[in-house]
Image 1 (cartoon, rainbow, N blue to C red):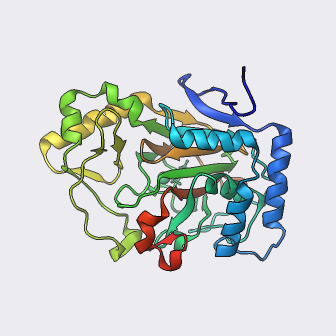
Image 2: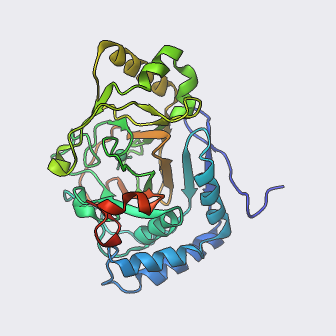
Length: 333
Ligand SMILES: O=C(O)CCC(=O)C(=O)O
Ligand SMILES: [Fe+2]
């Protein structure tokens, strides 16, 4: 019997795979709306202030039980796809999609509050100072002139990557809430999990990928704030169920054998990649230890109705990053 506590339903993606999904009922959506209402009442409040973050964390304990239960379960067992989809979150009336470079949300809105409430219930919502000034809720929108950019301002296909793969303290989760999809409804978030790809790899490739024979450089935006990249393995931990750290735009193999193993990994991932055409109110939470993500290409119009996602990062253990977070705040330097 399906209970209130256990209400995952399978979502059929392009490949028919089952992805952990929790769809809020309309009543639950109204309950979340009441919580976002409390967080958006003061239009001058700042998302990045410790007070607002504390309130959001406290209010997240009042999210619908089905959602809290799904988050708790996903945290312990991310499943073969390492993605949780939360559907039917409240958004309210939306302003035009922003198109300025570096766009972030400073003041609380219904979608930003819904995203924050959900993700702060998993762990600590965090950001990196060099990325968009360390704002905790960042807009993922196409920016005029940046169409070819391999980052979230672009609209060409975005290569598969672990978020901030170069960083020792990359986020544990990346969460992307869809406010609007693109005009043609073709932009898709793509995800690919090492749990699915691993069985497709030869034993030799697995062995090579677990040796420090790969370098992943930081994007230029991080400047000198990170040490020069050291060779790292791509597969970490128990080889039966490893973590993966790779960015198909930024990871370089150091020798010919490593290049062949990286190629094999790329082919294996290609075979298990899922595409999510996110709808308004859909939130995808990707376990950044086990899955990569990317995006299909789309054609922006810059007319205020373009694709618009909002993004947060989550770290599970604030003590591990304490030396990077001035004043015990949420931003990693
Ligand atoms: O546009 C997308 O669907 C994903 C963009 C992305 O990789 C990110 O914002 O981290
Ligand atoms: Fe990303």
